[in-house]
Length: 420
Length: 164
Ligand code: SF4
Image (tube, rainbow over all chains, first blue to last red; front, side):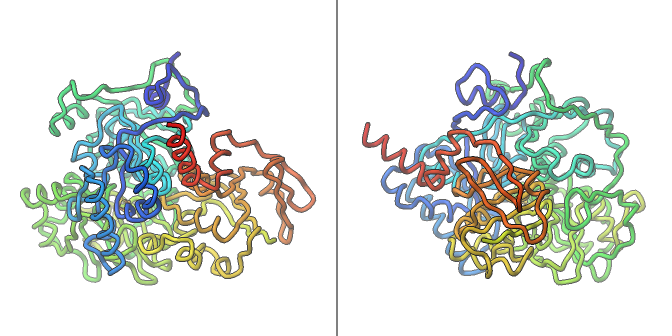
């Protein structure tokens, strides 16, 4: 029976010949990601872990990134509990603060391969669909149960097939693409669905695909997934995975889709998502001139070298506008090192940027770069919910790295095509 | 019993602000901040047995489970919405919180209406009108009936050990 990507992976993982949408299957994920919330996760099952132990010590990957370095005694105590649990259960896959944002680190540290099933107690686990994996978010309780049993249930989703045509026209970027897509389908446009990308995927770099897949959950999707092609293979081999190290999975040509959408990349323009909803998407030109007080460049959505470089190229020899704080948040230590080596960091600093340690920083409003009432921040992150950056009377506008950098230079929301 | 009515796209930050996610994990810590940015009256006035009615995509956003955990802890009988976001849906099952997808019931509500729910029969009555909603799959009902995923898992582990 012809199957979609999601059907194939779930059938394989459940040990079945085939599955159909709506079916509930029992699966063993290849890895389960946890971050600072591991403290709460271990806390939930502390007694039971004493009795039953951890089902599979290779499965959990713990990466501290959310509030790093600890901003309070309470955060510090949480981190300490995690380090103690790692030691107590001799967990092999632990990364302490400073290694980077969990999603970036999961990929850099070789925990993701095509065709794998990865669950994470963080909604942006969907990022790894960029590598052709089935990756999706779960809650803490489920992560806790997975520690004990190593298995869980998943419902086989229906699938949307998105066919990309032609290529983006720089400075239009992957972020503009995914925001435009969400603007078109809505924040619940793909609720419970798997979303496959077909067509001119080859025009998108791996970084682009990560940016796009990262935002799958903002459209309600269970997964966003890209086929394995030349770029994927190159990326994997740069991480030491030869062609024998993985088996790509992709949909059959005759698979059944719930919906098919064609998207012309050449028609996409620079866009923003206006407060407080990710699907309030407008062309930058419509809102150009709105003043900003903060600009956030980075996060797991757009904190890779290519993103920082786009901003540095625009900021080179220029200064951040007076009254604007530009925060640069590299996605990982590796990214930061490369950005230092290539001069990107010094360009950003010379322009007036504040470089933050690789982690989540201001993205979730727990520390660093919180907003004050009445302020507006233009950000490359993935969420602009009210209160997301620590203040419910502040506004967050989502945009691409180019638009964020251009706006930081002028102090008002600016079309990157106007600055050069 | 009271009905709390909200609109579309109620996200996890509205249900439980992100700034507390790493400092509040237990029901007692979560309760005072429930729906803080959406409806400041909720946390102080909610009573066991109350029902939440909402529009589409309820619970979208983060994977944080505090909203589901907190709503169950304060005794919310069910959230009835036009649709739910998937991570929240799952988190609610795992916490033993009843979610009902029933757009007709939400549309039928008028200010001041009461609402009653019969999960076993799969019916919800809003004002004078009664609606049915589809039964949940067995596996999911078993988790809910056990009081959530952890009690369910522990019971199974115990059983396995006893019969091993
Ligand atoms: S950078 Fe933001 S969106 Fe990404 S994992 Fe961290 S808090 Fe979540």
